[in-house]
Length: 459
Image (cartoon, rainbow, N blue to C red):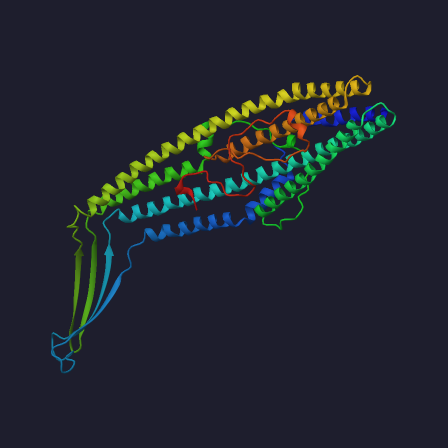
């Protein structure tokens, strides 16, 4: 019984350290996390494909501003069908003509502007891939730290249950306890072993997801020395700052500008284009002839062609303007939601640190002291332990969900916040402890693509 008493302060002090941690320095990022992000951004094929798409669109810009290709015409004019009369008849000759199309002034510049704005659009897609990839790595790393802290807490729980079983057996052998206490302690240890295996599988799954993001083998180890409290302190962002970072909003604005240029170009298409032709006709012994000419296109179908094109682009411009407002409104909503969640989770975290964990620890100590003195049943002490472990687990979940909101805010995601999922710590009676705040969103494994933007942003 004395050994059991000596164990309790060590367990409580170790677990209390989970709540009483120094504030991290946001300017000293975790080197492991920095390395994971760096590898993912350097190796992931989705980002390389997005970079290639940007370079491809950049190559189209100079092409759009070049004159149409000229053409060369070769001809032969001959008098009669019996034989060639070149040099014998004045009206028989060869001809070589060069023709250069010339668009109406301003059309080439507008086409170049349209192509340049396409680069802005593809660059917005690249930024979305980059932000999403970095967010996936941060979520996966946070989940890994959460699971490993849960494993540490699970180890403390296992140590207590082992000592509790020894104490129950000793009390039973000397006639001070019941067989039911011993059986319950053994049952809790069996339940905990199931959770140990489950948490190990969760850890391997998260490691495999992180390794996929950085293009490593699934089983490659990822050693960590940090804990959740070492991650950057979550902070809120002003809606204007989020709008500046949002690739969906940048994409929508680029599309509006591109549509405006296309509208101007459609209006200029009502103007005729030109073509200049110069040619020479050798006639053998006779002096050669030459010609210079200009041709003008006739937009005679303007009512059903060019004017319809102008109306088409006008409707498109109006629609894209509405898209910008829709994206901005949704982005502000998500920013407000995440700001409120971060503020609430900050308060909940402090409540755990300053109230719930302290009260849970006091309840645990009191239940153990009463059991040692023979004034309380074994189940009371066991339930107090499970409540204490449940509160510690809920505190870890609160820290993880705080990071999840912070990651989603930095990602400028238009979709719901993706939670950071951990594992189960075991005993069924743990449900009597604290519960982590719920996040209304759909769980996502690290590295899985997220549909967080309008259809126009999808690759």
